[in-house]
Image (tube, rainbow, N blue to C red):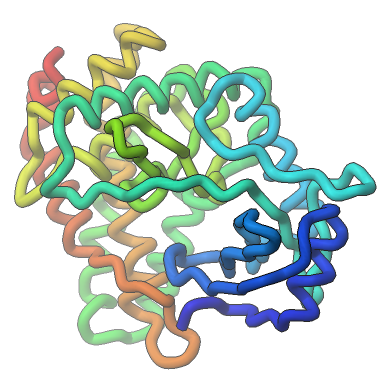
Length: 322
């Protein structure tokens, strides 16, 4: 299923007209993404990206698009949303919030193709997000400790024979990891989901665009760095070359404080548990017509948690070249 909210040619024409864009020539549903409905609209030789927000209302989409516009102006490599003829950033389509963005050409990296040069650039780009986002009043995230406990409760209540027996161990790991986190680490606006499918690369090996700020929220910068390390620097195992290059790239733009360095292991472990739990509830336990458009394997992040847990704080620092 390419999209959750289908649109007609008349829908596409109306939104293009609201932005003063050329007459519609083609609509293409985009299967990538797991939360929103995305389309490529072409008219008069110009291509734009249409996003229909499936989980945010007009106010929430307005806050997100305005934030992305400010980040783009501050130098973050992300396409700024287009403005309507009346100056607005968001419109209503099929009863839902929608926004248009300029189309960015580029390709995505498969894990086997990721190099230390790539991860260094990713570290630099992530640090720029953190610096540019410092003035932002970031929203509270949807994946905090209490949120994850709620998901574990739903898993337990489901009686699912595969997943409900895992709940006591996951709950204990989550509590232990939370207790190890330093609540005083520097924090602010974080991307929260900078996976390989949220980054476009140009033909010269440079980042063309950072995408999908749907999960952007107030979190620790060390947590966001470790989410990105776990997203880019793991094949069959944690890759020290890739992880060290990413940390070096990050620190070339925003040096880590000593307490952040000490806290990287706990932040990474919490991130690994977050994605283990959310991939169970959002993918593995959703099937049929209401299921996701793509499947993400929870076991890969449970493996990451086990690796980080075994390494401990000193081992994680060595992994990152510290």
